Image: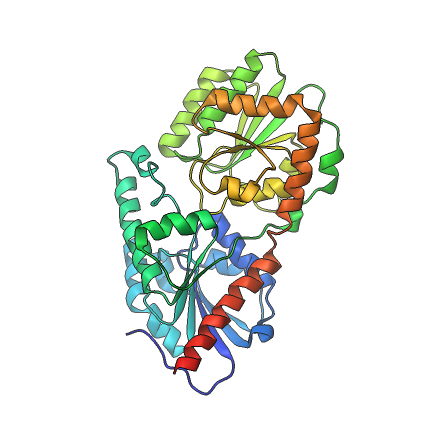
Length: 391
């Protein structure tokens, strides 16, 4: 059910289901791979993409890229999922597509043959869901995990973003025979070659730390604020910029810690979400990047910091050590003293700062959008050709 037989056509007509791609990382991914794609190299004649209008407006306008915005995208999430489950595959057939790329495993579409990407980790990471207690958020995560497992196991192949995510998720959904690891890329806008050699700190009055991430219970911004307070109490002239909006319990924790650590708002500032074009300026104006998440599939803001050349103090959880390797000072993201020690180590050691910055920039170069596009569409074509040969 839901599959379509291949005819004697040399070129593929590819469908992309981006209806669940709502996060900033998911948007950047689609813009990155489609902006760096030459379909003729992969014998793709057309790509039909289904998504919401905000995302479609961000994508390149090409003759081979046909954009579809269903009316369901403006309705409730329940209606969206029902439409995706029962009507999307009809539209895929109607447009004569013979292969589907799901850009998120949260899909309910069951069209085959297909490749499904896994980009969410929160439902799988041991201990993380417990942070939400008995709540609607936890119920939603449990349902999402079930949907994602079904999507991954029902697809012809899967794409994971890191080796770490692949292992943890397959421990839940079971072994997937055909899968590849394809990490995301990073925009060249974040690259500042002079960062490694510049004066530290940039401003003689204070050391400026930067943490870019939305507020959530696994991001631990309030612990970072406490760590900055510890360093201030030790005599360091240091400030912290938090970039990324928030709400709910996580934001309440941030507000509470800010009121305790910095009641006059002198050295901790929180900014709302910033666009990809505005973020690089904040990296350029900072001295140290902090990444304190305890749960990630592919830490996009971490590779942005790597590309910027800032010395990085980083969480020791999840795939972070796989991505950052030996280009950071690691800490326990739930321990303010551990975070403070890592930052202090960077502040007091010029050689360490230089070494970390140089390594981070070098490692970040493998995270390019042209490489990501090539590996993604090469895999899709390989799966497509294998199926054609069996028919």
